[in-house]
Amino acid sequence: MPKNTTIQETSGGPRFDASYLADLASRAFHQAVDPVAFSVLQGDASTRRYYRLSLTRGANSPAPETLILMQLEQPAPHGEIDFIRILKYLQKLRLPVPDLYFFDEQRGLLLLEDCGDTTLEAHLQSANPDQLKTWYSKAVRLLASLQSRATRHIDAACPAYHLRFDVEKLMWEMDFMLEHFIEGLLGNSLSGATRAELRWQLTGLSETLAGQPVWFTHRDYHSRNLMVYKDDLVLLDFQDARMGPSQYDLVSLLRDSYRPLPDALVWELVDEFIQYRQEDESQDIDRDEFIRIFDLMSVQRNLKAIGTFAYQKCIMNNGRYLESIPATLNYVRRTLDRRPELKPLQTVLTEIVPEIAG
Image 1 (cartoon, rainbow, N blue to C red):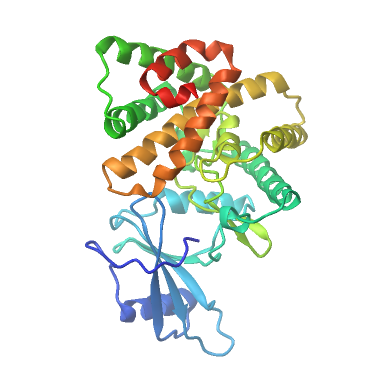
Image 2 (cartoon, rainbow, N blue to C red):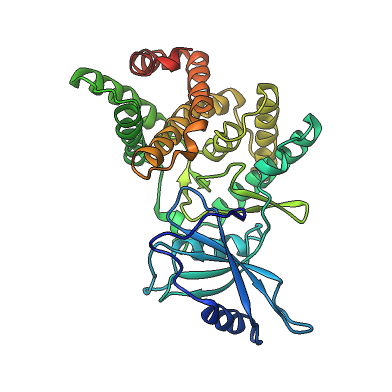
């Protein structure tokens, strides 16, 4: 879960008080729980807010010592939200997600299992190579299971079923990057011809990616959304799941803006993923083609991430993610160098963003 911090509340603060929390916890566990203390947690780049609740419990109480309260940006009076629908779907498939104890639609508050403070990123801060390999192998194994199970059983009840990484979505992300990174953060004013050429090349890339077979994708499967809890991994931040290329989440994990990995380890883990997928699906995978799409997806996914980081700074006045831009640009540069078919895209991008030239 998000980590403890000393940040102060601002406008749009908590939609609850201590009395409400005691009543909420008591209803969730059918037993008096009082008093309840809470602390603010540092969240992610979203508009959700997080709090850790500390409970005073009676003997043999079913309630845990701590809980996480997620506050949505707005109340949700019309029923279940995508986060809950997908959480229940993944739970049904026996995939590791936090338990949901209570949902107050009128206030937009979710009472969730506390899976601790240790993200995979934090857990591996001072890891040796063997530890790094062990934990990333776990993450790759979990991803292969998530992808196979969640795709095999998907139906219209799961929100991800209705969403695709189609050309429109992929290009929306590229236009977002263009607006907030190239024009916003860098201050580059593009000529009509340069803009048209860049969008033409990015559209071709998006068409190739959108033409791949689709699988359930978490969409933010990386080291800050995997919790190390009870010596295993727990999935977070899955509410934006949609159908997309098999390589999407693998790129998110192995070309992670927050946790760069040695190249040799990346390709070893890619091979592990291919092996797991072949075992799960009883079907051979063309390794060269899989890695080709992995590379193309890496360019799109990392350009998208750069757009998000720039948006956080330029629009949300949150500079926390700026430090991740150089490593992410480096992924783009190195991948463009690897793929001759991306030379036209590389040419126009390096004219606009010289850092991509190396």
